[in-house]
Picture 1: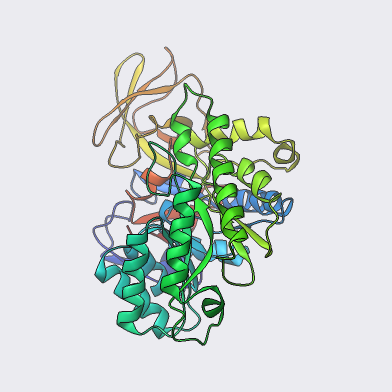
Picture 2: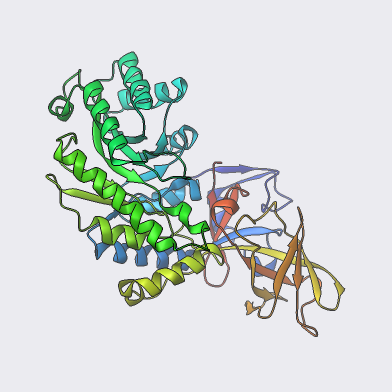
Length: 438
């Protein structure tokens, strides 16, 4: 978190009069959001809520003796990766080689690429990183003999002197990547073993013939969160059983490598079910239970707010940990117009927040540099590129020029709209700046 950087103009949220600013100057400028020291719209992260959410997750994981490799695609902020690593995360999960490159350039030493890698340039980059840095601990997914063969050829092409660690991805019908059956997963595991030099060879880190090593099994149950009209919990449980059944069979065949076997799943919706199920699994090697939630650090006021409430209803352990997770990410706007008695037009739109999981939620408002006030009875009823349409109760004192804080409906599709996000204290004084790399 100590790395300095320079933000060049023009960048949304940066004071309009400055040519460029570095992080150190932002941290010492003494700006306060409510004093209008920065232009709106602006994205902010509340530092106390980030810390609160991080403590909550750490305590929840401890109850299962589990680890987390948070998905970095949520924030794509190496500073937040650093915060998560300082807080004890096992590693960082990413989805593309571009994301891996960002993380590597900012010092990340353990990365799980939760995706298949099939392109030659991608494979060459990853294998090259492993060859250049013996301390780089890298893992990726495979779900077919074809993907295994392409990785094995890439390792051979670059003459990597240590094995590339793989996790077999399990999927479900109608989902994304992943083997759809135990039989298919075993076929892939056998291919890893034959192309990697065998389990015994792959365990020997010094063997030049040990090109691939099977480190574990993984899957992603989070796609079930969109199936509101089905028994989502039953679907998730069945999927987790498929992952466990595949792990047990592959373990029985002696195809895993290494001192421990990774079992990984858990987006930001059902990680409690993942932890409960996986922590009970016994294999011939110790099991590393690894969840990958990316949204726990910031939460939101929409999708994950609802899913976190559901998690609390399922898990008594979750409700025993206080304080509970809160929404750390907010978008602040001006009231531009009051054209109708029950309508306010705000200065932020879909260019500033994601709407894939619904419109943002009005949270607070303020005027004359005072502390924020709760904003009740209001609703965002429409958005355009640069405006939000907010329905307000008749007679509400909200005026043109007042500031309104919005809670986002999905953090993943809001972070990517900002290069610069301010970190604020509880009085909305700007204490730091967060840079993103999408």
